[in-house]
Image 1 (cartoon, rainbow, N blue to C red):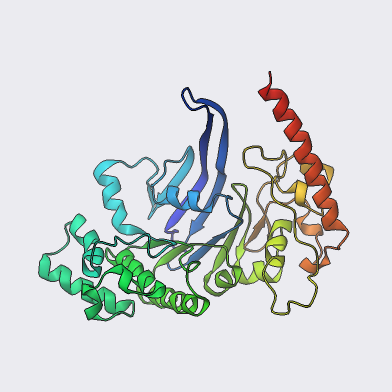
Image 2: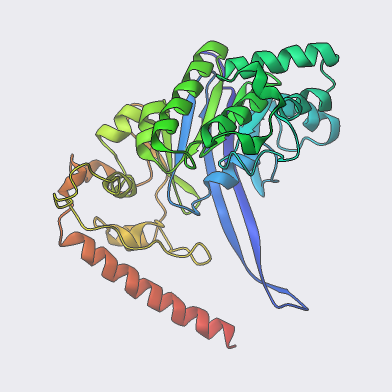
Length: 360
């Protein structure tokens, strides 16, 4: 077997929480990403999914070295890039690129399309003016745009066309890894399908690897080879996409799948929606999901479960993963309200504890 393109081991990132306007003081720290590990193979798409604030984008920015990790190791193409600086880090940028969520905000409105796509080539000193112009024409054609589009400005394009420009810019330096930070969430549904199909075609043609961040599980199911589910900074399940959607091993994954809108709105859902997650400023002890989990046992409140193999290729961080019902719909209507009550009691208890600390 060939070595993975990207290896992440024990990656963590903390952010300080400060209070005060004139003399700000640190009152706590938020662990946005908490010791996660995963790999991405060449030509593979690994999707990171989870609720807002779970650490997906922070993870992606650390992989690209846009954020410094607090702990852990990042290896790319067999080399440790965790502490790269200066020219070495600049050279790495050619191999790792990003497609942003908002195709309009990520493009300079004062630049023409040819300047936007050519800019990475200029910054890295690739080719002369004629060679760069030919490369820009080639890239626009590759993403489904015409050569005459090169002289236009971003505001003259639709959302889908602007995202194609962003994709062309990301491909300019011939990267091996592209981080897709919710690249279709700002687009119409019909345009989403076109962009996803374009990404898949480019991946097959250029053997690209994608780290794909998304909320839309339908999109993830269509494009991902493997899926990593994050909750409060930790990966709670990692599995091949087909296996995860057919037989999720973690209760949180089941809640995510149950939240997908159904095409039969009059038909009642199999269970009520899960309560709101705890604050990352004050995560629960033990398993972070236990205040919301309908399968909780005392051990869940005391010990954080490790990510262990449940089936071949499927990892889950749950003490009861091998005891859960085969169907996600097996959670009864009585169990979900019980989880909501536990979360309310937990939140009240922790609020009282914080109030006592702040008044000392």
